[in-house]
Length: 218
Image (cartoon, rainbow, N blue to C red; front, side, top):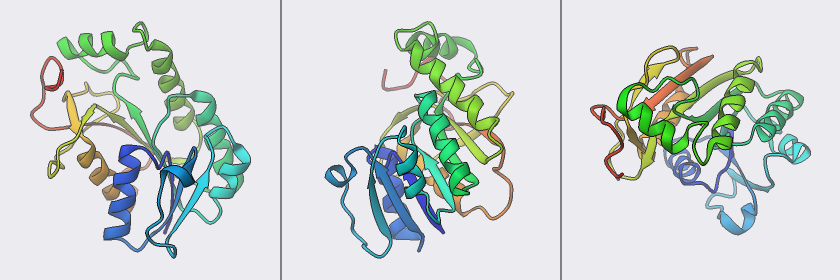
C-alpha cells in the first residue's frame, strides 16, 4: 500500500510515519509545507517528501500518484479540505482518514461540553476555526469518498499509553482527553483493517475513564 500523509511534519504525522516504517512494508509520501527542511527521509526506497500546502491542487495531485490512502492531519480550513477532495478525485484516490475535533456536531454534553465550547466552540476566540472544522467535516461526508472521520478529544503525550475508545456519530461524546500515541495506534488499526468496518464513519476518539469536567492537564 502507498499512503500519503498530509501534514507529515505534525506530531501525529511524525508518529504515524515511524509506526508505518517500523511495523509495515507500506510506502509513504510525506507532504508538508517546507517539507524538505522539516522532515528527514530514513528509507529512500519507501519514503518521498513533497513541499506544499493544502491549497496547491497541482502539487497535491502529483503527490497522490499511485496512492491508495490519504491521511489528513488537519481540517481547520475548509478551502484546503475542498482542494484535497478535488485533488483526490482527479488522482483517482478514494480512501481518506481525516482528523477533526470534538464538538463539530454539538455532541459534547455536560460540564465538559460547556468548557469545550468556551475553549474552541463557534462563539469562542477561535470560533472561526471551529466553523471551518464543521464545514470541512460536511465536505468530507458529502464527498462520495471512502472516508473515516476522527473527532479527536484534547491531545497530550504519554509514552506507552495507547488506550482509546469510540463514540459514534449521533451519540454523546465521552472522554475529555486522549494521547497522540493512542490516536496514532488507532490510525494504524484503521489502515490495516481489511473490512468495511470504518468506512463512512465519524468516530469520536477519547481515552477510557476520562469523563471529567475538563482534561487533566488544564
